[in-house]
Image 1: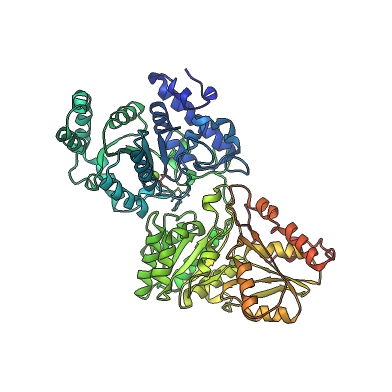
Image 2: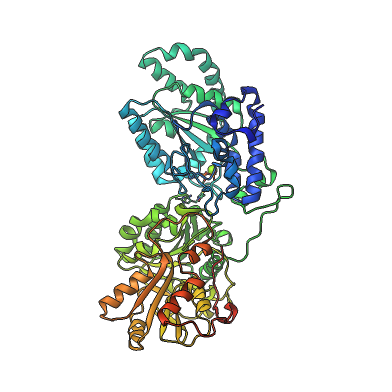
Length: 637
Ligand code: HTL
Ligand code: MG
């Protein structure tokens, strides 16, 4: 028996005998649990894909064949089998492996991913490239039932069925997204599993396949057509209707079945969808019984697994504020693109069932559904991560902003996010939203501000983007919207007096700035609150006071707060020295946000150094503690 410890690459997997594959898969499963218990990560999805991973690596050759994993969060097994086992201990941390697949990381990773629903379009491109060069490597996208709810995936299927390149599309269906999966196609997929006539048709097709396979392979296209019909048990099958051969559903934890179908489909021309049923969290009791909780985990004791409890987060503060607002105003709606848990909306979704919708992993649909609601006089809030709103950008401009519709974008995970890395960093939204006419952009520095801003955003005409970071925050003081402090729209707040050098901060960097400033009377700290409209009155005031300015933001420098201030100073004819602190024009990988902030000179230490450079002398009384100064809302990793 080949031991997992000795597997240096997929060639060693091929040395496992067919009989021993189930035991090998078990060992892989235990290894994934071991790794995740030490490092955290996407446990449940990786456990569900163990047999699939073993089957693919045993049969095919990932160095040349293209395994295109959608999202890439189910690939711990794939990484372990492709020579990265020794590095798994550092996964998702600075300098370590990525949590998803990345072409820069390994020749066995066909696509760099993190966002869902891209695998099929990328696979189509790869198959087109292959066929135009007369090559014969395999293209095998593996897509989850959740990822299949994305428009990109469906539009790509439509093309694949039209162009018909040779390709095995594996639909890894565990009947779960992060939360319960949604959508009509998902309902249809459940029916496929329960219709007994279908199951028996599938079984007979398997038997007959073996018998007729060889002769059929040599026959002409009419026989191939017959084969196709034979494979497609349901004439009204939507995948068949889109031009793919459909096989399944089969048991994705049965290695024999997987190998049987994968081997046979491999001999067919054109695109085939193999529908594989799996269980999220398979083989690990806690994860199987609560796959929502164990979708992602931080480190845990594998013998006595307890999911690390979360502290009160910005997402919770938003969920609570939204709940209170929805009680207060029956026009408030909530739309989530498949991120109920992450956006803090579990309670909201229970209490306001009639004004809540999960549209699946379809950010474009989330935004335009918001537009539709707003057109009919409702007050939709689109709860969305900064990184995922990138998927709905045209809809923000074309469907919401042009007609100045009342849609609130509740943007979570704004700023660096940590372990998920480059694909998930929320560091572009100010830049891409600032360019959109009619859009307002604000960021609270604590939960009280979040409440007030959310209420003001709902009441203010036109689109408003509110953003907050990942991490913990002190809960707000009062749950009654009537009692929330009013917001002066577009106004910054001077939190610390001082006008020799003034730090203009936003959201969590306000805490950094106050910490850096200490008690030095020469240094002022301003919470900008709004990036758009920008507080021009404040800039004039500061110019008159002769202040030098430093902006600091947890966002990419091009197009961010600092750029907005620089543009405004120029446009207003104000000659004020300005130093911008933030993230440079590079993709920031996985690693601790705080460490990156310091590395890029925008953490407390970096701000202090810049302050001293601007002042031309050391800070006076720099030792003031954060507690004395911070207004709340410093982000945590
Ligand atoms: N929106 C987009 C465009 N991409 C991602 N990755 C998300 C949201 C967030 N997300 C995941 S994993 C996941 C979501 C919604 C569920 C995917 O469900 P699927 O796979 O059925 O495809 P399963 O989890 O194994 O069941 C991550 O960000 C990791
Ligand atoms: Mg799924």
